[in-house]
Length: 377
Image 1: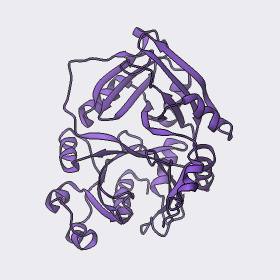
Image 2 (image 1 turned 90 degrees about the vertical axis):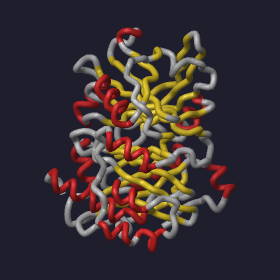
Image 3 (image 1 turned 135 degrees about the vertical axis):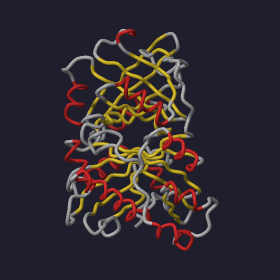
């Protein structure tokens, strides 16, 4: 199951030519950014941070930046029916366009990746205002998804030049979300290996875990997945590909309705998953149905002793899995828009570094029940 160079530090160090500090922000292209921002404030507990639009001199778009813990989300909408933002939303619906990565040297990151063959999205650019400067550049990854490299060590403003502080009178409480744990991409048939090789060559990532269709399957469908990680482990991108099954897999459903490859889900971490999920459910966030009662009846035998009481986990439908390092708790929302594409994972790690392989069957059977209701299984 493990395909990793982590046992050979000299190999990882040789490939880790990109010094990534983590995720800087995730930008969504959406049909109505004002309403999307309100939803994520209300349902997920994000807070106002910054805004750019006509009032700040931007003529083609409006962007709202929200923050919770170390997570920054941007919701951007087109102000006209033509242009790349409107075309992206028309084709894909609301979805992730940019996975921005924090670096100490954006121009160096551009040179390292483009010299290895990366397709350019944004040439090296320096944005400046009275609060300092932000350097950025970008490359394309799978589908129309983009990685921006953001260097902000010389900037003291609220977000970056071109944005102003965003304030409203609506300040819902945080739900306890802390940081982005990983972001999962869905790619087309026979595309997982080329994308994995792209991350190895262009970004210096390592394949730390691999799952095939014998491990990720149900009676009806299957998929394959490889987890890519940078050298320090701050950035992880699992890549999913469909596999042959009796019926349509969740990845096939995503590719059909997103009309291409893209970000399937964003995993966000919390220190108290029970409190976080209770708060989110009270605010209207819909999660996948809980697994059958037998899952919790057998939980202690399967994962051993855990700190949490099983009763609230059963009540909320939270899954548990253990690896050699510890255990994790996780739960998945239903798609957060009408197209069955993007969803979120809430995860709490208690030492575990894996991704819940022991929960795959229960999780994918729950997804299939939702697919069947939509008529897409």
